[in-house]
Image (cartoon, helix red, strand yellow):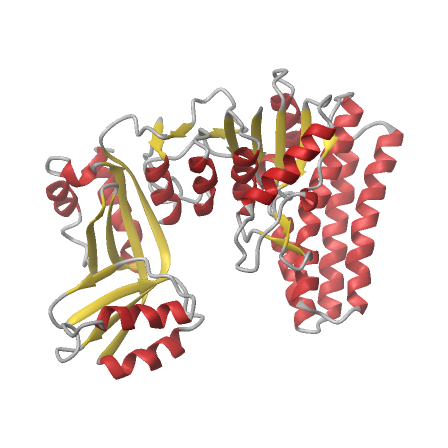
Amino acid sequence: MKIMKFGGTSVGKPERMRQVYELITKDAEPKIVVLSALSGTTNALVEISSSLAASDRVAAKQKIDTLEKHYRSFVLDLVQKEENRAKANAIVTEHFEFLNIILRISFSEALNKDILAQGELMSTKLFSTFLDEQGVDHLLLPALEFMSIDSNEEPQLSSIRSKLNELLKQHSNKKIFITQGYICRNARGEVDNLKRGGSDYTASLVAAAAHANVCEIWTDIDGMHNNDPRIVNKTVAIEQLSFDEAAELAYFGAKILHPTCIWPAQQENVPVKLLNTMQPDAAGTVITKEAGSVGVKAVAAKDGIIAIKIKSSRMLLAYGFLRKVFEVFEKYKTSIDMITTSEVAVSVTIDSDAALASIIKELEPFGSVEVEKGQTIVSIVGNEIAQTEDVLKKLFDAIKEVPVTMVSYGGSPHNISLLVPSDYKTKTLQLLNAGLFGL
């Protein structure tokens, strides 16, 4: 069995859904197809929810009506037979009736999660209706029946595996299953989600649970590129990455892949392929246990970084000092991306300012605290790059015009990370593309 996940741009227009139909019916191999919401839908639902949270029901109603108009137009183009069009319109009516009903309900976080789930529910139901029109034998497999997270918002892989395989066993005569990405149930049994970009995570979890032979992630770009193609003109697709390399790239800003996607597939050693819906014959990128080659493979950048320096000649060398510093970040559930130390100071970076004021207040007794916002982590990723000849020379020769705030080297054999002011992000990526890849 293989897993095929299609993102929002891959299902965002009727003609794109027709391309997805062609791809999933290309062979007779059993498959589970994971769909995101139509492109733009989740953003629209977030705006509707925000308006409701602000008690602006007029704005929420306007946004609901605009989104419904889009879906009515989508249905008109997607299905042709009258009975199928009626069925598709009934699906749209059902979900927009729900969105209109919530205009009269007090807003809550649970309601917010219900609102955000509507996109995936509609996209899968509409695609299922389209498959019915094409005469494709398939089953719509509701993710809410098997996908779950625990009280720490972590997926319950053993439970997912048990429930999913039971459902597959019940319908062993089917070859094509359609399910929703992103959405799940939480520990209280309520509708919840795997956060933005979570459809990749769903696909990887399903692949691990079903012991799939491959997990295909279909997007609008032909694989993982060696640099950000939105910023750098000359980029190339990477043929092969290891799970570790891919995880580093995803975490440090490569937008094609959700950072959490790698772990489940890696646990079960399921190869992940990154493919292009618009260019299905392109080789894309394959992610496996093996790296394929040694050396620098790609550069990625993560924005919105905050650097925090704690300077204390009195306490830094004291026993337990670093533990106390880390406990502050643990207390406020704030992860650290980079860390450097000297005899008198320790510097860390975080990517959220949600608890920044509280963190600073608790760090101040340890020494002077300096905070620098507007930073970007630029990561150079590859297999055993720490042992690659001249990599540091090439790296720093390339960016000698860039003011580097921090360097992380040696913590991972696959990653060298730099902290630079965000104003220098574009220049840094372009210089590295020329200096490391000759592009």
